Length: 175
Image 1 (cartoon, one colour):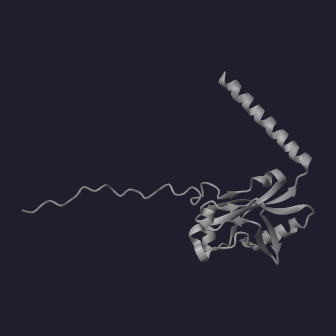
Image 2 (tube, one colour; image 1 turned 90 degrees about the vertical axis):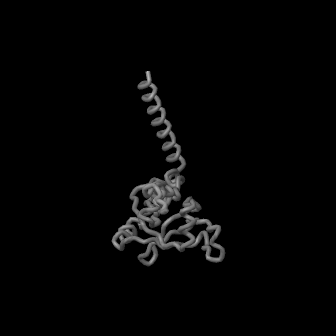
């Protein structure tokens, strides 16, 4: 006597639709919060970055730090200095140097435009955030001019005044 071996299977469930938020580009891998505090940020642009394999995995794990990172144009090439990407734990002997100079990938016209702007007195190129876009690591760079101490105080005063105004509007709407 033959047995009916057809089993009821569930329809194909989609694999983990919600990937890691950093890897899928929903959340920044690293952010330089002190940049907006220490500098007036103007023109922002996106650049690719040349990384080794363990560096990409470290960035995905959130081991990147852009606090002191800045950009430099040398021989019509763009470089990122002082960006710290921590070692990848399972990397063993294939690990990278955490503070090495990394090349940034940008179009030649963009680099020439930046070179002209960077020759102005007091302007520098600062890394503001690092994120994934279509599976590739990107760095957002901004032209920056340093703030004086009184500029920082003024920015803080303006921020607290705006917050108080928003809170007052929210309170008036509740009643």
